[in-house]
Length: 300
Image 1 (cartoon, one colour):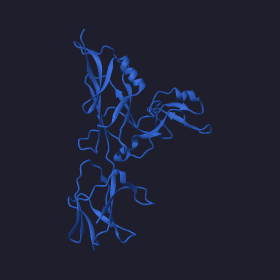
Image 2 (cartoon, one colour):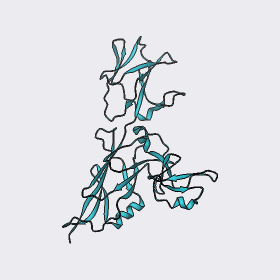
Image 3 (spheres, rainbow, N blue to C red):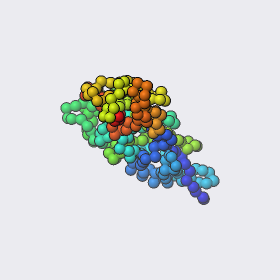
Image 4 (cartoon, one colour):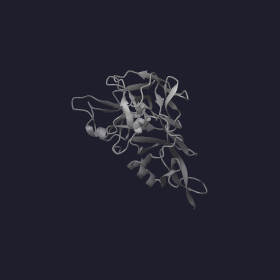
């Protein structure tokens, strides 16, 4: 009988920073158990255009899979790397990728917006000392491990997935260290291909301009956005030849510029087309205030 590969599921990775939303640099890779599942069920996983697709071998006449999947649902695990030095700043997500991961679990929803709630510790081994007490529950709030009654190997034998202890979620995963994020895809039995969209947010930061008065000494200096998108206020400076301007509100990062910044001395233009602050110039607002600002430097 003739056979073909039919699409049964797909996922798109998007980012609000980019004009077309597509997160083209990111890579999605099945973890070993999922790769073995694909092999045993005659499935293929490949990138097609702006999304990744799972295909399964099926009969042409009946469109039924040549190897059935039982039971449903099945949880498929994928590692994600963003291949972007500034992916945390670009997304406004602050975490230590050596011990924590972005974790996304799909379910009934088709679209998922990543937030701080998706950041969680990633454990392979039991991370407690001998004198600590720990109770671990699964997503149904059932106790699956207790340090008072169970031994370490009981934890080791837990299936990969998201669990909870001390009211905080964590990911148990033994093959995730090389990745920056993990996708847990819930594959369900359906007649139509499932499409899930994962969107990373654009980080939001205040902009700060350091204006060095080297060649001119303006009387009243103002920083104005001609497009009226951003409002700047002048801050304090301990140097007479330096003026500092800080945006009143945080500004979402965007691949496309939506501002037209101009420096004025009273009503006269001093400098036009000021540069947009770059992620490389992220700084703390002050020694006391640890929120980040994006810095830009201008000389007049």
